[in-house]
Image (cartoon, rainbow over all chains, first blue to last red; front, side):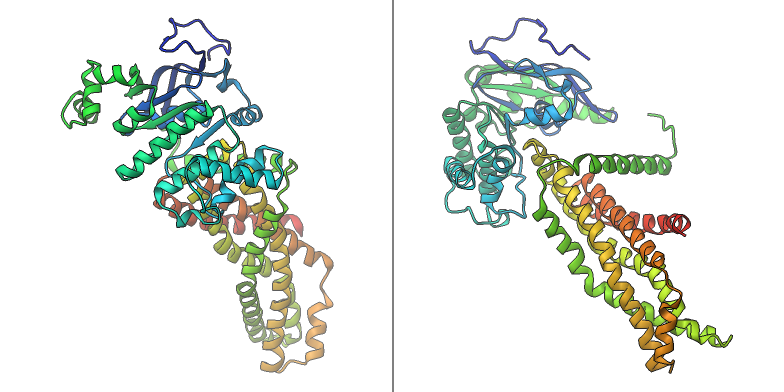
Amino acid sequence: MSEPTTQPHAAPPSSTSKEVKIHIRGLEKSFGSKRVLCGVDLDVHDAESLVIIGGSGTGKSVLLKHVIGLLKPDAGTVEIDGTAIETLDNRRITEFRRRFGMAFQEGALFDSMTVGQNVEFPLKRLTAKTPEERRQRVEECLEMVRLEGVTDRLPSQLSGGMRRRVGFARAIAVEPDILLFDEPTTGLDPVTTALIDEVIVDLNDRLHTTTITITHDMESAFRIGDRIAMIHQGRIIADAPPAEFRKLADPRVQQFIRGIADGPLTSEQSAAARR
Amino acid sequence: MARALPRPVEGFLLELGRFTQMLGRLFAWTPRPPYDVRELLRQMVKVGLGSIPVVLLTAMFTGGVMALQTFTVLRRFNAESYVGTLVALSMVRELAAVLSSLIVAGRSGSAMGAELGTMRVTEQIDALEVMATDPVHYLVVPRVWATVIMLPLLVVLADALGILGGYVVSVPLMGANPVSYVHASFQFMDLKDLTSGLIKAAVFGLLIALIGCQQGFYASGGAEGVGRATTRAVVLASIAILISDFFLTRILF
């Protein structure tokens, strides 16, 4: 296990002058005999919107779950503002999570509760707000994700895009300083995707949160990200602002951006399958 | 990777480990605030009230069958006067608790497995953790205690209906004397007979709810995984009831 203190690793990437909020070094994770993360190094800066892209099963969601402490690394470290999250005990991790908001793939709304109760849930559990204050905050959050008049509906009565936005509203309810979006647009039509992307950009601007979004939709990535990182076979293989990212020479990056079936990504995959 | 233990043994040890861990977390979280009394009551209604009709029906017919069977056999020894005693003691000490528990395992244990399993595969349990809410505290604690409280109450009803079922068969159907039948039913009954049945019911309630929750909690693999969790919740709880019944009987009498 590495020391909880910050170690002076190789010069920190200085794409922005802002301080590092999330500092990941040498992160490794296996499930059984399957190695999912094989040494991920990544920095996320304060108030930055980072997009992580990569194919299915490349370890994007696993990486995100390490950031929020839902999974413990086999090796390496994840530091948030200088605190190594894997060294915290259960109680302190619970405290720590108050600073996070996470929106899950399909929304992960509690289906026995109405939309309003879903958004109110973290407020009830984590704040000392009065019922009236909570009601106001719920309205505010729903408005920020451009949903109104759905407070009393059940999640099952909403469309996929709406459910995800309710998930966003729930994630921002307690004013977290780090927001995580796990494949927010997967399975949605292009128009709804564009709307969701706009909401994410809007939230990032208005709330000045540090945001990590995971996606395999390149258009979304370019719309949302201040910086884009690509994960492949458990490692970060590219990391650049959108304009530079487009021009990267790495054939794997180009294959992914253009969505081409034949190329280094797919030939590596079939080689791995043959092994 | 080489397997150190045969698969069934490994599976059994894994389940046992998870069960013990869940039991530990249950006791660790129960005394901690916030106390969700409303959720507890909601679960009590779900587990208890819903099971009443089927528990009553089962108890009534079981008491009736017991009377029919023992009447036929005891008549051969001219000992029909003990039918009431046999039916009442069997119901109170054993049958009411085991049968009610098996029914609750089928109704509520499976429902808990399905509900928590669905919450697991749709990431609702992860969402709870992310919102600084321990899922065992929020989901498992109310379900387990609701079942532990409600099952003994159901068993009291089952006791009464079982004895009534015996009476209905013996007196109007087989022509037993009503006064001596009732007298025989309660003549040899101790308070301990009743309490031992209720203690059993409480332990079975703990097993049913904890196993149901545990199966759901560790479910994986989409709809199929939820189905598997539901089935296992019922099967494992039923086995646990029957095996622990033997040991409880050994300890309590």
